[in-house]
Length: 194
Ligand code: GDP
Image: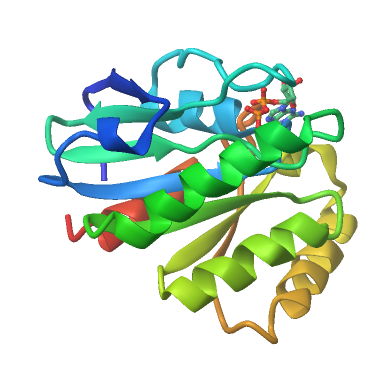
């Protein structure tokens, strides 16, 4: 698909404030600092507001209306070491309510840093999505930081580490070089039934 228009239309702090589920949507999740904002900037072609990176600050679900037709949803990042227990609990409740009840959600893109093996919370996220039955795909971020041989090896290692959960699509991506941009947009377009 081609993104020709994208605008932030809603910042949601409480689940009751989600926009009506009248459009197909795809959500983007990942650890804090994985490169999600940079990724969204690249695929949407706009500079998105960065609202969720400061520990302790209230995190929100950000709704982008794309081509007047779809919602691209920026979910709050997880895994900040210095986040309070209360804040983690708030994240859990918000995400649980979102995934369980959002029937217009077509898929989740899970962003994983291509340079490292996934961490405990990444596996927890996959386990969770799998149980809920939400389709998902993996975007391997910051790919430009790897040498070709390292990249190929990590690609296989990351993929293998999720094999017990199922077979999924893995797309390497770099917001710096724009590697993978076309493939990502093509895959998202297919998921949304473009
Ligand atoms: P977020 O917390 O997941 O939204 O992550 P950001 O998009 O803010 O990125 C975190 C850091 O990683 C920033 O310093 C970015 O410049 C850097 N970064 C993000 N994506 C890439 C990438 O594809 N390549 C490189 N080299 N750096 C990246």
